[in-house]
Length: 243
Image (tube, rainbow, N blue to C red; front, side, top):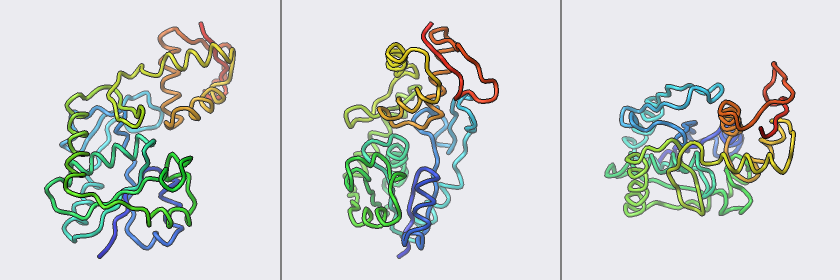
């Protein structure tokens, strides 16, 4: 039996390639389901905000689905790598549960925080740690898959602007959900470089830096934050403060 490892993030992908798990098939599934418009998800497409830096606003993942389908046909073991804190990989896990429901496949999941509570993502682990985490895998029963699938279907039905983790539960929220927290941080910090603010925010909310920048740019556009010192070549070096 072959094994298909499904991971989110280039870091996790490269680390796994350099481990003994690299002998398995590894699928890099960099799908931003937390901010994507899910209305075209059945066509294996999502739309994300154009302003999200270098991300492709029209994202098609038909190739990734083809890889998963081929694994199901071969009766491979499919293993998803996530955590109870990483919204990106967790949503991919929910989506895959919905996709494979009633397809009779061997589906497993690993949670990096079960290996070390401080590991909010498998991307933080070294090759040996990933190998050890594989031993803590969970085989998903049909009931497990159905339960996760139901959560996914609720998210698709709601199709909010954003999906987050809060107290271990995936929630649908508006895109401005974190605005007040960002403004409160700026109130405490005073004038600060964008890079420093993003660093602080990432310690409290595990999101990619591009998404934090997206929120900050929205607040600037909406007149709640102003740039007091500009670096035209590098947005991260701009100094900002409350209006």
